[in-house]
Every structure is written in C-alpha cells, then in structure tokens.
Image (cartoon, rainbow, N blue to C red; front, side, top):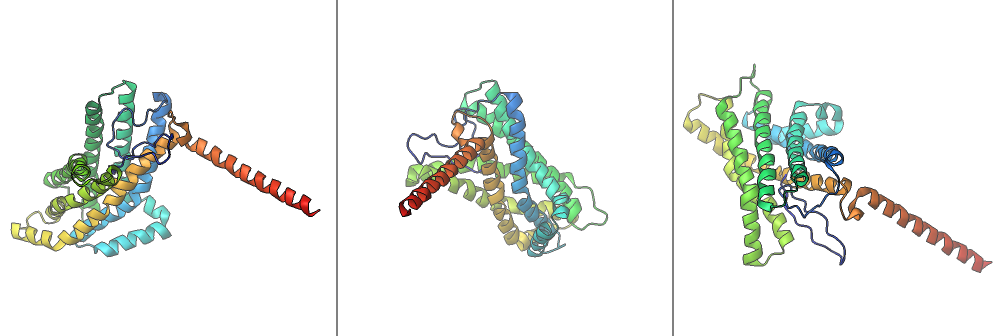
Length: 322
C-alpha cells in the first residue's frame, strides 16, 4: 500500500496532480488549504474508502495462505471459495472476520498516515526529513503492529485447531519481523532502486518509481515468506523438529511466495493510489480544478454546451430545409 509514483504534468500551464504514494511527506506536494476541523474528517473518510477498496482481495489471499500452510484447505480452493462468497453472499463476506480485521489494518494505517501529515501541516513543519520521519514512522508502526495483531487472530481462527490455542509470542514476533522487513524494502530499498534506474540506466522517473514500488516489495517476499511459514508452522506444531520445519518451508515456499507477491498489487498499489486520489478529490487545494465537485460541474457544463450546440445545428438545418 506504499505505491510510489510522481505525477508529471501532461499539459502545459496546468498544475500536476499530487503524488500517489503514501510515503510522500513533502510539504509542497499537496498544499491543502482546509483547517483541521474541516480536513480531519475528510482525511479519515479517505482512509475509510481506500481501505474498503483494498481489503477484499488482501483478506482473501491472506486467509488462503493461513489455510494452505495449516493444511486445512488448498490455496486455490480457499481463494475461489472466498471469491464466490464475496460475489454470491456479499453480506456474509463483508461481515466476516477475515474482511473486518483486514479492513481494520488498512484503515488504521491510512488514517494514521493521513492524520500525521495533517498534524505536520498544522504545525507548519516544512523540513522534508522531519516530515518523512514522523509520517512514515507512524504509518509503519501502525501497519506492523496491526498486521501482527490481525495475523495472530487469523492463526487461531483459520488454522483448524480445536479448540484454538493461544498464539505464541514467538509467532507474533515473527509476524512483526516479517512486516518490518517489508517496510524496509518499501521505504528504503525501493527508493534506492528507483534512483539506480534513473541515474545508471536513464529510466523515466515516473516509470522507475512505479517499477521499484511494486517489484522491490515482491522480491522481498522471498525473504519474508519463510518467516511467515515458520511462524504459522510453529503455531500449528510447536514441538516439530528443525528438519520438519525446513521441510514445511520447502513444501510451501513457492505457493506462499506467489500469494504474498500477488497481494502487493492491492496492498502497495490500489490502496495507496486510491487514498491519495480521494484526498485530491475532496480536500480543497490551490488547484481547485482537481476537486471532484469542480470536475462534475465542468462535465455538466460541457455536456450542456454540446447539447446546446447540437440543438442549434438541428434548428439551422431545419430552417435551411424550409
């Protein structure tokens, strides 16, 4: 959900849209004009909407991974079953534990990121390093802690144990370590790789940011997948030998890597993009032409002008025929 892309003007004399990556913390990239009482509810609303978009697919994939590792249900069967439930029984799906907990994770992450940026704007903090330290730090802590909490519940709910055992501290700690590595790949490795593509290979900066923001977290799954498998296997088989754990990691590595790589698109692309897009559409800024209300008004006006032009042309044609 930390999708990196820098908007570039496509037309002369027209202000570019704001960057669509959650880690952006520069004071000059958005310049929102609304005060805290008007802005804070909108920031929370944007986080809510973005979380609702990203959570269905992520919840389906993450639940399927738990069931695959725990030998409760195959990865494909679990994903297909959850997708079918979402389409045919949406009330059951969206009220289910998997969706609700995943929504809480991303809502918490986006809300903390948005509100921390609003607070930095309110105190007029302009130093980029300071802004990024607080915003990225707050969002990372929220994401890592919320995911560790959610996955500890996932382990109890979807591993098939009867009755569900308490999640060991080691398992929770491994979940937190897994996501810390992902945050490092997102906030440190991805920007470095972007700079490398631009400086050493002459890539367009926009394309380099998109490529690095999606490819680096995907590659990081080769490091985090074994940790994830070990964490869940320790929950399911606390007395298994080292050899048995290594065998389980080898057995599940390919599927889990694929599934965790697949979740990068919604988690690091759709969520971050939509969060900032909603903010651009609803929070007042110097370029008010980007606001949704202005866009709707402009399209209605254009439509009326076109219809008026057609009516005039039709009237003129009828007059000539007469």
